[in-house]
Image 1 (cartoon, helix red, strand yellow):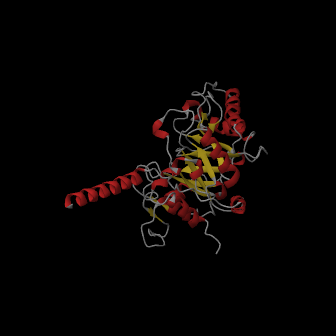
Image 2 (cartoon, one colour; image 1 turned 120 degrees about the horizontal axis):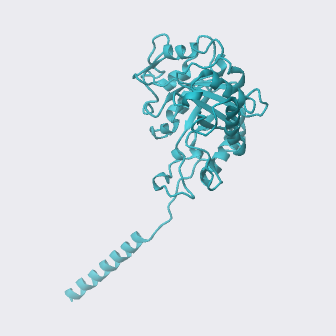
Image 3 (cartoon, one colour; image 1 turned 60 degrees about the vertical axis):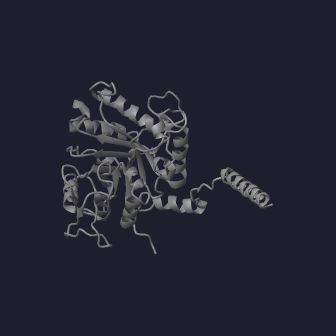
Amino acid sequence: MMKTKLFNLMLICLAAFTVSCEKQNTPEALQIQKPYTYSDQYYANLRAYKKTDHQVFYGWFAAYAHKEGVTAEYKKSASWGEHFAGLPDSLDFCSLWMGIPSLKQNDSLTTYNPIAYREMREAMEKKGIKMLVPTIVSVENHGFEKSDEGLKKYAKYLTDMVFDNDLDGLDLDWEPTSGSYLNTAANFGKLVEYCGAIVGPKSNSGKYFVVDYYTHTLPNTIEPYIDYLVNQAYTQGTTSSSAAFLQLRYNLVSSWCPPHKFIVTENFGDWYENGGSPFTEADGNILNKFGLQMYSLEGMARWNPTQGKKAGFGAFYFDRDYNNGVPYGFVRRSIQVANPAIR
């Protein structure tokens, strides 16, 4: 009798264990967190803000993920840090350093990427983010002849990329690697003039025209043709930055470039972890409002040349700030410092 009771008890326990295992192994639908959605009025207000007089944020974006149509597994990312959809709403100008996403297959000037393309168009249309075509200028690398006629053809080639892809403007990057012909200020000035007849403030095209540079001595003839002059005021060859350094950079062009066209930028390729390098203001202050070390992106946001209010500030590879704990935390905070919200 006792054995029978024990046997029955064992059967009951086994049945309960089996049911428990079946319950544990039954797949259940995961509740995936969806991105917060904003109202149409929010986006209308955002686009209206972008049209006001404020300090713009200018960034080179090089992190959009490949999804459809490509085999690069290492770039198939679910992180919003590698999507146009994850860009900060308050971003003004996005220079497409990774290339132009498009719906065109086998196009040598763009990258077939339907997901990135759709996200980019939405960022333009809903958030008012201006997408620019960047290029390190060189007639030699693009097969154009070294002459005025070659420069005119090159200018059309560059500006066609803006119009053919319905983007917002052109970013000419004048680098030490720009080739022997365009390394001279006179020839670069001609290229700016020829491009400026097609895009920029003198063209009446509605397209932006930006020149960015590091330490070249720029031709003083280019100002009427450009919307902005972007200086690569990178922390390079040193471990800190300062208002004095930024002032020196502006003084080199102040005789012909008004402050409201001048933008300073940091290199987040090297200095993203803290929001830049340690920064010292003109009065010697090195602390932010929290009493902590100030870093260069915030320092650039706070700085203005002695001659007047600058156009804005920004960062190369600003997308790396996405993974700094709070997504784009340093970028967003610096934009807020430069443009305090009205309470």
